[in-house]
Length: 276
Ligand SMILES: [Cu+2]
Figure 1 (cartoon, rainbow, N blue to C red):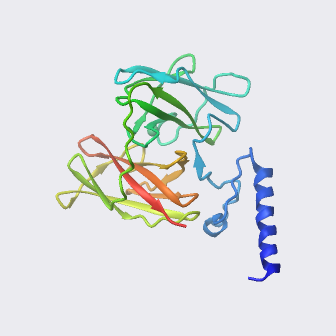
Figure 2: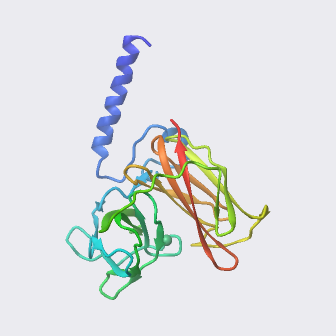
Figure 3: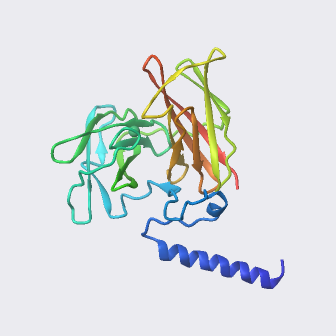
């Protein structure tokens, strides 16, 4: 590469940086690779944000937890509300994946995953009983849509006690959960490109029938190791197939949830290495 083209490349990078800065605070997302995977007719305005859940306040709304500490191993009321810029409680939420509010709770080392659906009280607060069995810092994600705009706001809850941090499980093609074998059959992931994640569920080598869960065959949450960035994932309605754009190379944890026809909910977690 000669000096001129290097300089030209540098100018492009600078232009992207300034474009990014100019768009900060709006819903637009600018990142390399987007144009390559963008669907025809899909403007940058419609593009899903690849990363959410890093902020307690975003796009004018704020997550207000009633408490940021919790007792270890004892059930407590996890309560919160969503407030707007004037401090007013937001009550108008869109239904997404059959619910108006999704709450994800996970310890900072990505253990102790819980996906919960709180109840809305008359005053607009949301609450539900939660037990956090281990000490440590937990990330609490409120995932919802308001005015057709998706939000994932997050804050921390600390549980006092002696904490034993768990190293992340090594990547594996299949995990066993509740007597079922869950395999990641399609999972080639590359940073910045839309990737397909497809899972199969078998028992003793035979396919297992699944019931619908939250309006699809399954639900997938993907979190990035380090900052626990929360990825937007699109489910396929007919099978355990999801489309996700991993914004950066690195290690991610996938939490797949699905229901068997006996009504039981299962959670299988996978460690996913995303390449450049
Ligand atoms: Cu949910």
